[in-house]
Image (cartoon, rainbow over all chains, first blue to last red; front, side):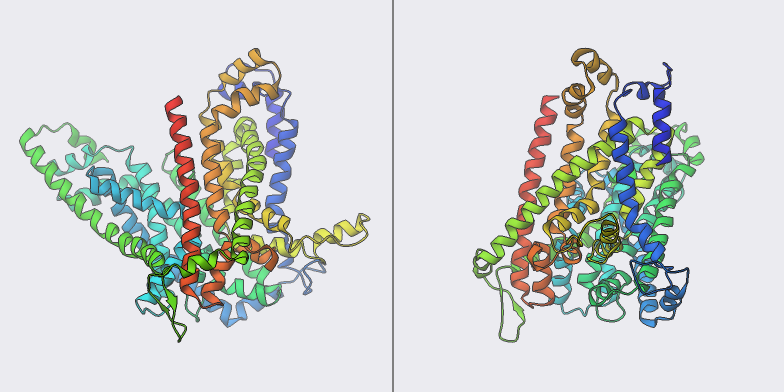
Length: 293
Length: 301
């Protein structure tokens, strides 16, 4: 928020040539209301998050009076076997989903970028549909698919559903990177005696590595947080962490949930920050999040 | 990459190149097969099962069976379900409107006044949205409860009795707006970034006054972003059930809540499937409108 106010001061500074300065000029005199509104927006955006974090350190059970600093809810969280097994389940789901969707998503991305047959175009279009399908539809579909085949719901079914949902994300991110790289590179590698597999492994994969890492981190974070799909496809025990939290919230309000929530948000935030930074470390200007929009 | 860079210069008989490129295409074809089969089995087939089961019914052992009747769809026409459908559509539409009203100024401020910290601001915007929707909704439900922090603050400020926020349509719509406004901000931000800013300058000379310039120049040239945002917010908002569950009550339930009930409490999967199919149809209709609007856009420019 400090940044926003700082920028208004720069914008009123008189200076002509550089692009940023000109942007500032184009709006001089106007932005007060919009800037104030944006500041308010950021306050409201972070308010619930800050409240969860603060009250996770409350010594009392109350969620509206803060008494004094204490880590009792964290102690309770880490001693709660149910929550810990859910945490482990969620970490396992996210890890396997990340690896599985990376593998399939990269295959899809490379194939779609290099094959221009009609079949490939159909696959390309279908693979975009999960991105615009509300999760509840995907969830219902996966649930019926598994129960219809007589497969018992478990962590495996959650993983299968999450991978299906994540392939599209990986493919979109990786295709963005591949599009900027021509097929001649693999041709050249073949001319130098590479087998097709080697060409992919030695030339294509290193070139798309930043996108791969970013996509992997993003998928891990999204899966770790995902509630709806996990809710529809999970078995009884152990349940993924978000599903577990949901049932606890509905039963009663326990401050231990604030501690769990703080940990979850911390994990996601770190992963997302990394996902944003990694492509930049490799010198690419666009980050994975840009491509999602 | 270095291997590749060197190799570009290496001459090669055109014939060999063509042959290789054919074998290459076959390789890509093999790469395509596993993900294509996976998507077909787990996505296309499972959606097909939903559609098929929506014509089925529940047998005497409460097990769902396939069938060919329209009974489930007839059931949906009774007033309880119809009310929920209309309510969901209204909530989702209002959510879209609020997201636009909130999202546009925020995107505008960051894109045009973000200054040096623009990327940082976008990151600060994106990260909380992808970090635990459930926890943030839960946080609002405790904040807005009768004894929550918001009401306590209001009481201290002299409001006579706690305001009832939860279990109201307002709370559900606010929750949806809060949850999905990012999908409005990002496309508008991208459109503003792409926009030629000298247009605004020219607009100022032509129209006088920033407001007239905004409506005559800025808004029309970011129409594609706005349309994209409308779609990206509407799709998840119409299918959401967490907001209505945590911030609302039975009086504010949406299609998502009904679907969830049919599968977990009502044990009527065929009816739940029919609800899901109708939800999908609503989304397809909206999608078609969107595609036609963007198509017209493209032809005009």
